[in-house]
Length: 102
Image 1 (cartoon, rainbow, N blue to C red):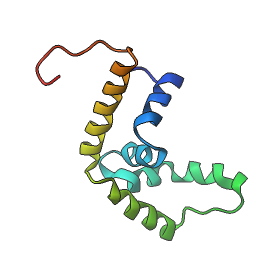
Image 2 (image 1 turned 30 degrees about the vertical axis):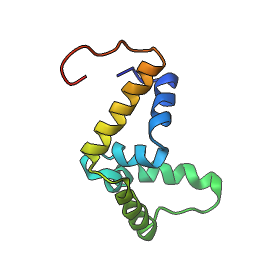
Image 3 (image 1 turned 45 degrees about the horizontal axis):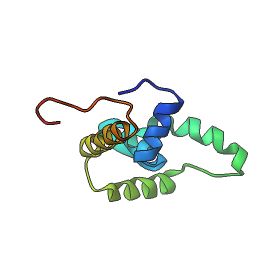
């Protein structure tokens, strides 16, 4: 895959929304682990929005909603990556695959 940077972020946004990206960013533990690791930073950034809170009730609700992505983190990651490859090929930014499973 392409290196991190603005173009890469646009490609990610084209195939998965922010909520799904947070879910996948948590690794095998999904959104629940993402919130454990990144929640405090997100909460501090939210201070500009008033008084939002990433409390237990909100976390439970978000994690439950992540279950509606219809797949494990591994399955969702494979689908996201396949969609990114199709997007890059459509944009002419990567050569067509020639091997088995392409």
